[in-house]
Length: 108
Image 1 (cartoon, rainbow, N blue to C red):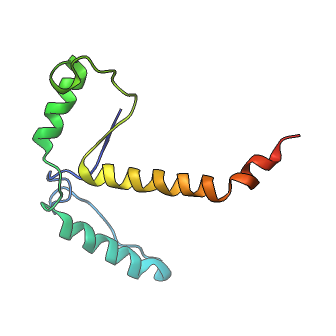
Image 2: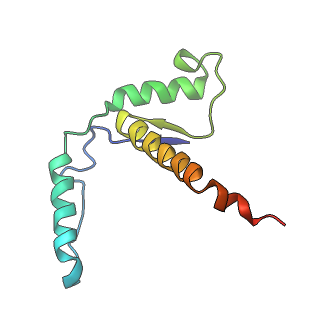
């Protein structure tokens, strides 16, 4: 399973992205801001989709970058994806350290 980051495709282009701002007054501002953010991201995503396809084909064929490697069940692709997952893992490790005595206190 590939967990892709943001790749520079036409997914966010006006012709492809079909969106409707929220009709709920309390969410309208956040919804509008989110949609504006998506529009600004169009063709500014960091990932090169051709490079992603090359890697995915290598994984499927077990050649190139995947030669002699165990293929993971999940593989993040993209610098933004790497950074986000790494940050989350570090936060989780810190939580485990900070709360270790409480977390481990539940046995009989």
